[in-house]
Image (tube, rainbow over all chains, first blue to last red):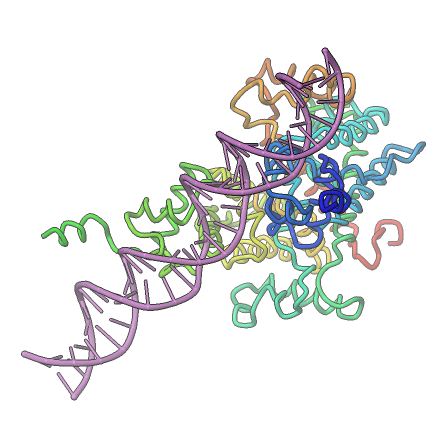
Length: 236
Length: 236
DNA sequence: ATGAATGGTGTACGGCGTACACCTGCGGCT
DNA sequence: AGCCGCAGGTGTACGCCGTACACCATTCAT
């Protein structure tokens, strides 16, 4: 009876259940607080039980990435390469942003998981069928870097700071030492105050840079740029 | 006597000595293996002694970043904004690349240290005196992101893999599943084989993306782009 | 009935960051 | 000369981590 109650109380573990629980737990308590022990506790199980389903913590993180990447929308059917890529990337961004830890974990993985690879394959495919040479596609993918998954490394995160005073990047005493940073920070603070509050509009900045790159790609494509002949425009 | 010998054997600690030892040790054994305990041992001291000089491990990492940032060349005197920025960024890249762990640690810091701030101030200054509005400078700095310090987040590092077989991103069995990735990977492998070995030329890719952005910046500057009037070209 | 596979358990080890109480030796007072 | 304060190094200990390894319970094919 007691056994039955126990059996009912918790369904059998599985790799999938472990991963999904890990994602949920990381959403809740943050990635740096996520430990095998806490995850096990959450699942009502002893820590070592997890190791029957994932080889180690690294593989757990890999699996978590795949769960998030699985949330990226499927590609829209018919459109020019630029809007297709744009849609794909902004959708990836939406998926990753649903889990505050995701970008950081993706960053920490040295090698791509199958789901990431599949996503990349689809993006590369858009370029290739959109008239980009293999060569140009290669460099273009590098130029996108992690942006292809919807995030970039800002030098520090000014925006998501919850405590308003904590985001004073420059304390008043340092204002004289960093005149240009100060000028810029004050302009931004002033700007945003009238709009939404403080900090920068991440989404705007992301699209600003993304479009700058996509426009650059289009120019290179038109002038049949190759790495052997970088200044295609002039020599053609 | 014994005391004297001991006193001679190790100079007194200082914040500076601690930081430099930490940088050296991280260079040697890698950042993930760097611990307060090992650092203390390296300095011939008990772990807790370090805490008289740095508040905690986070502050140690901050200090390490500052040491590396301190190695960035001073700005070249007179030149147009584009080559000045370019020189600054490529110099930062050189400094950061001298310490394989540096980019990762910079990435992990939430807030900028004074040295980083000073560096950013100088780059912002180049844009401002080069004819960029505060508004455009702001977005341009965001677009650069971590690239301003000479590194970007590639989706995974293909190049520095020491074991040649380890860098086969796509195992043969998966070739059919990821046709575009495979096509691209094979082209790259073929290309590079004749040149240097395998993998991608990071430096080339970095400059490719950097120049794409700088060229885009120049266009926006010329057409007096503002965020309130994004398509300046057409409406002027 | 039996023996192997599958999956959960219990214990234990070595590592980590760091709080806290302690000691020691030196420079500057009276 | 005697004292004190304090900067800086020490020792011990706590609670956390990932995970190796031996074990046991259940299920199921033979």
